[in-house]
Image 1: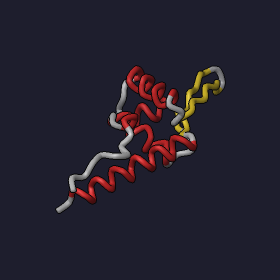
Image 2 (image 1 turned 135 degrees about the vertical axis):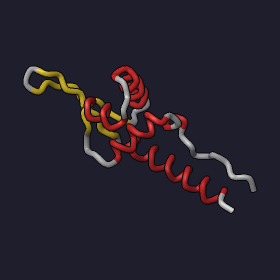
Image 3 (image 1 turned 180 degrees about the horizontal axis):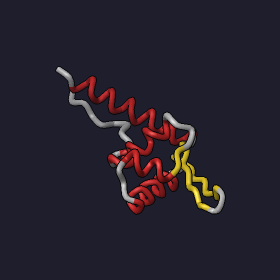
Length: 100
């Protein structure tokens, strides 16, 4: 039987989105600057990927001020956590089924 990529979520195919979701799975929330630094992304690149994940309902964004400085932080949603776990399981199953 030829293994298939059933269950692979296209939303997580990008290295940036995979990184964003991985960081958010193990942290309650992460601010924009920290996420940018951890993943070595530009402002624009991070903004576009977080926007896409937010539109899918996988992450949520909170904008606030700390003192006079704006601060944007992200956290994973319940739907995002479930979708990411299913994606990882599908990858794991694919790897197991392709090993000789």
